Length: 224
Ligand SMILES: O=C(O)[C@H](O)[C@@H](O)[C@H](O)[C@H](O)COP(=O)(O)O
Image 1 (tube, rainbow, N blue to C red):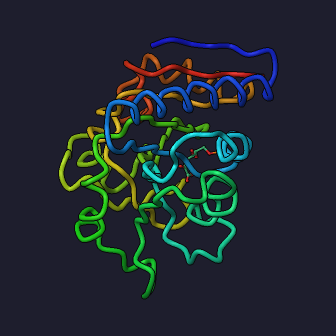
Image 2: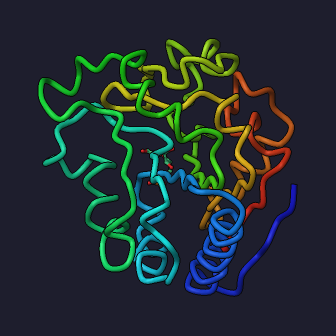
């Protein structure tokens, strides 16, 4: 694990976007496609704003979420909505978005096994950006989650649903082994509270601090 501390949040966003763009370019030079896997939540918006304007062959990039909240796309809590509004615009508008939720029907009825079909062709992940909550969850791998034990071990199907007290609505998430197979992993954390949570997580087991399952190969990007 490598920790990069930035002078401010703007520097972090630029540094992280540069790394992600170089990794995707290198992958596209060697392969037909590349997969970018991104978090939802409130932190990554500015990274998406920068990345969406970067010149690369976006038509060959698959964009996959770490996890999704089982809400309609019109909800302000929808990660898909965030991605469509902030990442899949400008140059990145031609990237191929791989949704975890069927276009029709009630999102809370999602079938993780069925949705996994669409995800498998985009694995392994080329570049993974993760966020982290104060409770040390990442993606929707929540401490105390009803499917956490399986999510920490299951490689296939790559998706699993998760209910947890701190999660709000039910979620669907990529499992830890699938996230761990990413070629490049970046953890984005900002503020003293998250830094403290991150330091605590380093000495706890993944059952208590799920982010721990993904730290070994990660570059951690932090700004106050
Ligand atoms: O949809 C989500 O909630 C996520 O993918 C989740 O794992 C997120 O990255 C963290 O909860 C941090 O969220 P913030 O950036 O909002 O603090």
